Length: 598
Image 1: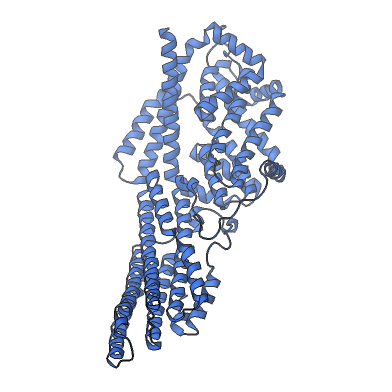
Image 2: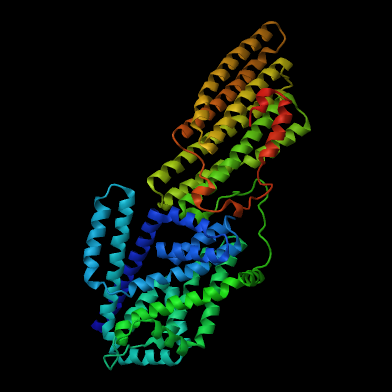
């Protein structure tokens, strides 16, 4: 009984160390090279062959097909990658993940502790994030192999157990049992790398004759094939709640592994012979770990070569399983670009934040223009325009800030990324303040009309001039965030003086009209309040420009490593630049300062 308990705890502990090492190494590699890997992904996804190469390279470096698969599903869900491109990348990721098994086939037991020590010291003592991450990669690599060593040592008694020998004999002669066993193991552990590592270690144990493997290559191959099916559950789980194309990508991953397994099940004897031929020669227990790794690589390479020319067929298959198109969100409901799946990919998440913030900022600019029109026009058209603009901006600030907060909570950002995300959050708040000022100004105008009071033509003209100043400075501030132009940002603070000068001048002009009985004295509070609101918009614009001066700007497509040609912008979800220009030109009716707004 004690021996059984020791074996179970040893397997559990070794597996825990392996998974911890694997996840830590993957996380550290993503922090150290994740952004570069995304650029590789973008550069190589222009055709199916290059897409497969991209998936293979990225997964080989990140040591996690799950990380690549989830990343790709997120890209598809966010319309950053097309379905055929995503499928080709996942095909390549299946090849890339076999590199883990190839690494595990090396015998480095004597070097595990020096590797762990060197990695720990690098991570503990280094001040630069890059070296810290590299140290964590080395440390995690050592922990991973230590977990493998522990599992190997506790599995040795199993090789002499009559029960396990009999079980492995059944698996060897009834391949479907091996497939089910491998699939169930991977479903439980959620890591094909872990279950293949266990398989490599167990297969390396000698059978009753002391020379042959306890399971043999023909017995290990069905379990290996089951592992490949089980690993698709990660993609399927990641696609829950995502777009139809994201779900299709996950299903394509399952089709790939299931179809390959079905074919290879009928070829096991010949497949085993081929693997032995390409693998090192020697005693079976000495070489079977490498044989299993080679079988894993061969299976995925062959399946990829077969399926690559048939990607259009795969697309049709998954579209048959999940028919129809995604419903586009109606205007004003839900986020336009934000996708929770991308929270684990900081750069791409901040790119989506930038797109959402850009849409929010342009909608607020249009709102400002509609409020300006409403000041001098009480008609139905002006009210309808304002209501449309207000609806488009409703709740956008809250959604963006909530998304950035969740991005911080994920804890995967570097200090530079955190600083940039904080800057985008501050800009979002400033845009939100501009939005609130516009609502307050419109409310003041409506209050005047409710009380039956009307601004004079001179007062409306003066307010229009201040609106023009506010529109120009706000527009320039947001442009500086988009371009990173610090020279343009530096000019905006000078514009604040122009607004304050105009505010003083027009307040004096209003009081002069009151004195000359050309204007109702009761309008003074509202008129001054509107001028103050416009001054606060300019102050908020200066705050935005100051963030640009602190090197905060939108995260671009180039930063994410996704080809801009792949973007599918949801039409009708925000005012386009052309629509904005037309509306602004109409509202300013040829006024030069109004034309300068864009």
